[in-house]
Image (cartoon, rainbow over all chains, first blue to last red; front, side, top):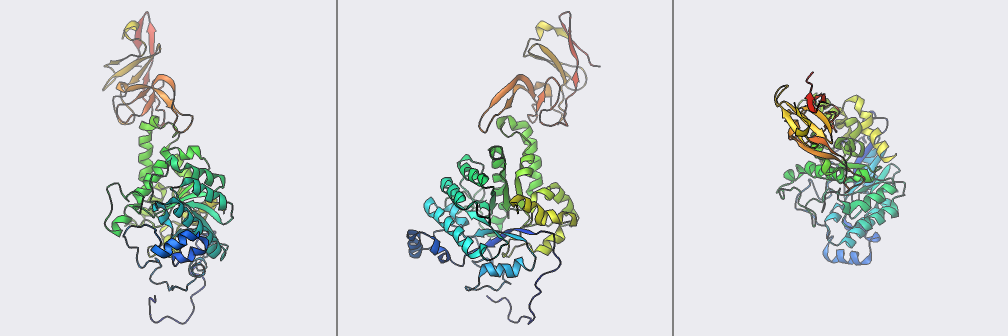
Length: 369
Length: 113
């Protein structure tokens, strides 16, 4: 997959510019398999046989995600033999002096759409074991999110109790595609287990409209990938509002929830409107005892990527203030995808005084790093 | 304003004084209160709103009730106000103007100040 035919002889500089913040956390560093066969050593025999016979049985919609099925940027040279864990250290962690990178997966977001919850749970378990053996063991800066099957909360909680005390495990991943908004009490056993182990709940764009999950929008299925991407914020908002209204943060006061790759522009408007409507309607959900914005500012964090790009650069400061960026936003690169936010480019859009918090401190507190 | 007997507990009466919409006088369990009939939030006729208890909760899915008939919900946007103080229950920056009400010789007396 060569992007260019002739390359300069000199090796690249080990670091790219000065460090952007005293402690840098990348909250969205993807880790994927080459092929599902990579996790066969961790999968029960019946599923290996079924996959060999029929393929992965991981549902998805028919959108593209350029430039190829692995999703690595066109300028990155990867082959079937590339060790992705080492490649990511070399191309990403080292050059940008990243102190901790949260592995957010990607290969098994589709478990949320699988109707056979035993198969889905087994895939999640296998992916976690594979992650520990082939990624976490490679570099101490790697932290991992646990893949679980949200549609079987009992098995998901079991998986959290199995691996939740591993020092590299910092979060539990529920893909944004879902059968219910995540405040629904069906899922609460998962949150109970996460809270027990001090793990952050995390939701990354993925799985919407796939298999048994709901369509990506309430208006129906987007036709095109561009259209689908514009749906991400509304899905995230539905989950955030559900978490507040169902009293999840009253029930699990220590729980924190990080949303990744769902845009950030909606934060100010949602906080304003949610508070205003709560003042008139809060007696219909009296267990929501505080302003919704209080719960969200205390319990919800949002990844910066894709960072907003207002036409007038000077408006960025206003926007970040409205979004409570100093407490709510955490840097997320989305490496190695085409639409990632390169750290220096992201920093250029973020006022200097906010960089220490956004690039590291807030995530460090969130994950107790 | 009127005889005490004309304003029994649980009732209210709009008095056309003190500006647009006037003043609403309430009898809450034998105590009399008066509020400017204009919501400080967005100008609705506050006094004509639904009278409610304060709805609270001791856990997700549970409803409890206290302060029966002491809370007024503005017809515009449903914000809750304490009839006795005029304060919005969930927005400390909002307060409806209150007026003193007294009972003298069986008459309800409203003082506009």
